[in-house]
Length: 208
Image (cartoon, rainbow, N blue to C red):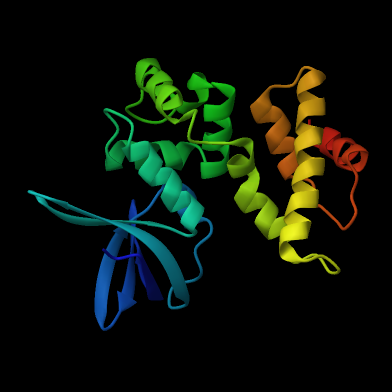
């Protein structure tokens, strides 16, 4: 199995990228959401990959972090969801937003993906709701926002920031906002050292 590919980004196609590794250009299919995060052509990129072998051929699917790859594999575990549909879902909803949609039971948000009807969206929620936690829904965001704050160990920062962010999300939900709206607003807040729940809540309200 090819766990990841690292090398210069050679080309960007409509639904895939080409990365050179070992003198070979590998075509990797990616969600549309990946394109905005790619480096310029010629610069190095690391892509976490899922390698699929079928009768009609072999395909590589890629993501810029491990958690997104995990989300893709979880989608493939849903009956009726193949790689193309899974990429379509992740193109419309970022992995964090998809996790929150599953947690909140927001089938309408998932059904916006091409080829996804309400029945399939509800099946995604039913099959994944016991596999995804609130911590996973905000893990990648908190890791990047809190992991490098000066004066904190990485784990301590993530734990403290998660607590404040989670409570802020719950407070916004209590005010009448949906889980998706609350989470998106809190994710826009620039978290800083020793930030309280009240401070996170106050800042997040600016985005609602």
